[in-house]
Image 1 (cartoon, rainbow, N blue to C red):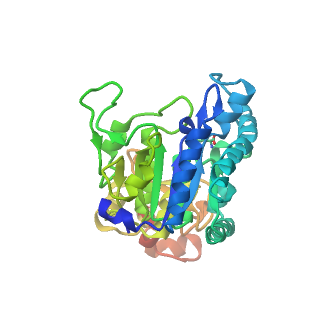
Image 2 (cartoon, rainbow, N blue to C red; image 1 turned 30 degrees about the horizontal axis):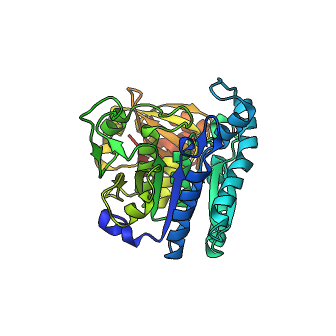
Image 3 (cartoon, helix red, strand yellow; image 1 turned 135 degrees about the horizontal axis):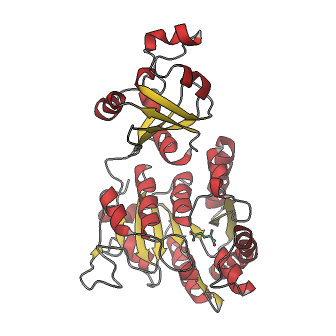
Length: 376
Ligand code: GLU
């Protein structure tokens, strides 16, 4: 596991996420020289035995350039059409870039639903393993043409983090057009300095990172920090580097002080808890009282029906629900032991009376501590 810059020389497999603004130009379309340079860097890593996958943005941007839609406000179906046009252009450009080095690329288009579904997840994971062992570079993007908001990754930083977990990578590198995270906006503040190492992505850091970045991508620093948190909690280190700088990847892996590194920290969760916290869709909400809040946060206790105040939504037994305090603050998530209907009937009921109310008692808790993850 990568715990600091000194460990970066040991990376065996990495996922490199590259933002739209690096790959697409508003007038000329594909920035082929940039792509060629990145392909050369990745190909030379592979010669040293380091496997790499790419998460490439740019489909929508390239489609827009081709259609003459740059700078226009686009409806969802227009973005999807642009992606359908831009995605093959993107793949063609990567193919060209890698062909010079005798390396093949493969296209993986994913949606969030693919990762939620265990069978599809395993398929995607096995396919990438097979590609790696055949010496091929997987190029991943969101399957933009079919996604609706509910099943969207949201942005490719998030997709990058989940792809890194799916592929069991050691490192997620997010390439963008600044050389890391800054203490303030470097475009506006002369005192802004690069933060080389982030041990924990705190809510304060998130607030300081602000909103989305360039005109092309959907990401910005906030989404990179979120992605770094997802990756590091799952045991994958993350880094933000300047993708415009030649050799940035090699420099990072040699342990040079470039960009921002997010080492794997002490807050690593098991894959299972991570799954509950980051990947599973939320099917309902359980509002709890202060006593239950205290027990969960302070003592790591299970959630008992007696501490439940209200139940929102429809869900089945085993589905993921959000746990919310009386003040509306989301405390965590967990897998429900009862379906929504049953849960509503046992609101505020002591555990030894569950059977009396429901006619059966499968569990004394409504969410067992092993299936409960704090996310606040
Ligand atoms: N999937 C989008 C595209 O390829 C990019 C999303 C993002 O940049 O975050 O155009």
